[in-house]
Length: 338
Image (tube, rainbow, N blue to C red; front, side, top):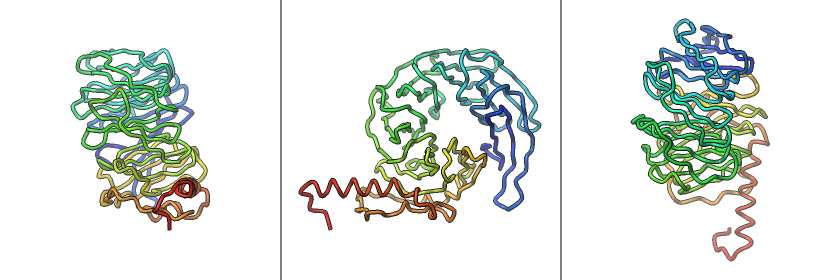
């Protein structure tokens, strides 16, 4: 999503990149331009911080930088990495980072037209990256289950976390930069303290098939996309699944993005659609520490008018969670059963 305008970019498995203007008014979505410069699938797209450029990376190992206005190719790094590229993150007006399938990270400076940091600390692909508000520390999530920490200012590797179960698929900053949350292929959110990257401070199993992507909505709430096609809103500390924001029925969700202003969430999946969801109510949700007991078979709460309410499959994970809780209660001398 563009940082200021109602414009979004999307890349597909054929290597094409599209720019659209979008609107909540029916029939107002328009394709502005498309680009077919990549030879293989486009893995990630990202707007520059000022919204004037679009970065795209591909399985063909290239980085393209296009002008947002016309879609004109401004810069190309054709053999940017030795492995297929997987993600790109603009850090400031001149510096951006890329991660590849082999676990290599590169930080580039456009003023030099070259890298200022290269490191291969991960044993598997880099799935996602995040940077702190000062642009000093870069965090990488990897398929080897570790979180990497790199100091951009000093141009050096800092440390790797202990490996977690499953691939780490996403990394976001929460709680005004004091917490880092990583999603995993096992359906667990792992939490780290900002000054304690070596080991997790907390973990929260969503009972989703997986967490394939995750975006912050507020300082406490994230939205996650899963293999089961459900977008869940999750509160972090206290840890709660708040409900279902939307879904791509039976289609794995590839990516989530928040529109400027934080009122709309966009999602894309294997159904070749970009869908929009109203997330304006999430900012007003307050979660207290007291956990109400769930009723067996209770549905995942719909958080928007378009969210799941028709498909039985959407509630399977919550039924399972309730059953596990009831079995645990029945197996102990707990006094909180009805």
